[in-house]
Amino acid sequence: MDVDSRLLRSFVAVAEEGNLTRAAERLFVSQPALTKQIKHLEQLLGVRLFTRSRGGMALTGPGRTLAERAPAVLAAVDTAVRDTRSAGRAEARVLRVGFLASAANEATQDIVAEFGRRRPGLRVELRQAAWSNPTAGLDDGEVDAALLRLPFPGQDAYRVQALLTEDRVAALASTHPLADRARLDFAELWDEPFVAAPPTTGPWCDYWLAAEARPADRPVRIGAVTDQPDEWLSAIANGYGIALAPASAARFYARPGVAYVPLDGVAPTSVGVAWAPGDDANPVVRDFVASCLHAVDAPPDGPFDSPTTGP
Image 1 (cartoon, rainbow, N blue to C red):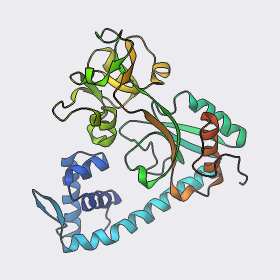
Image 2: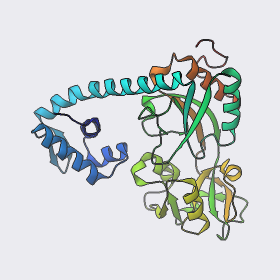
Image 3: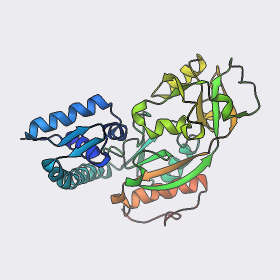
């Protein structure tokens, strides 16, 4: 009998969270889809894994047995897949880097150029991910490193080097009554509809709605949900809602119909480079991290401030 590793990941998330809603947010899936996966796994194994109640999901005896063994199985699968893909990219002399829109923005070109200086025999392949994939391919081993906005869901599982910090601004339709203001306070936007990332991104979505900066009695109004920059810009320009964005978006994503206004009352946003812990000793990954630091003139958290030598 073959058990899909995806079902095991769903089981582990529910077991660790003890709650379907939180587990679904962590996995970026809907709750009904997660419930269906757990039922399918129970049918395959012929045992009941959880007892369900209003208080959450409690493991049964068989469920506890699986919960003890599944993480090691998944870790071994992840390591095998990541190492195999990494070996293939190394053989092809390619470093694959994932990124999200509005991650490093203008700095990306400088990072790639600096890496080319350090590693002239290697090519950087940039892969843009949708906002519904906030690790930009790290989770499934599709990339060797990623340029991401911090914090991102699952960040504790990776090595992360902070690169830069910038203010968040308000993005509004140029016809919006507040678009001509020199500066706004976030409280002025509490009752505005927002253009949001997919709700399955959980904490990522909440961060870009600045949910922590608004009172409990002023819940967010969602005017549109988008997963790509072009859709996001169109929704704002067409007046479906406003949004928060990094200050560099005003330069990198300037377009007719969208105005960017400096904003008070929300914390700034940071950019970092992330990679798998198993690649700590990989000289190519280390040189890419060093290239990121050099391009933005950031202090290193580790020994990444000088070129390395090696294959």
